[in-house]
Image (cartoon, rainbow, N blue to C red; front, top):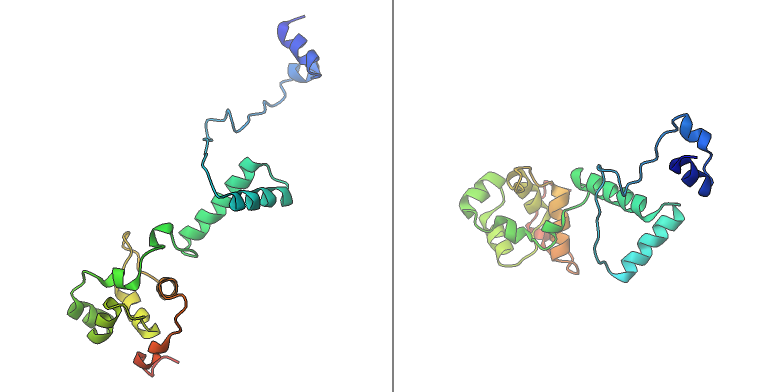
Length: 171
């Protein structure tokens, strides 16, 4: 008896399957198309991830692949902002601009731009105008929704009392 057949009988594999050339099972661990990802995360997040995998009958490898695929799909579609924009403010986006030029291009009054740089909350009209001019590092324009999200993150507990600066055009 050959060594391969003996080993297969030892683990309970029917040797006739091997003789007919059954498809070889490739595991992610040995598949050259896959790589290892490892890191430390907060225990609450780990618990939530494990619960997600258990609820969806996934092993951790498939669960991680599914979560990362969904995250990057949303990121690519602009549905969520990248972590890089997490600490950026509207003032950061306009800092360094010639304010007269930015006011001309965006049709946002220069006084509003100065107020934003001084720390005041931009209005909806300000964000609409700035969205026409401001671009991300890749040259892609910021959407109004993204600018609103940045503003709201910068001013989480402040209601938008700056509406008196908004024009009457927008309802």
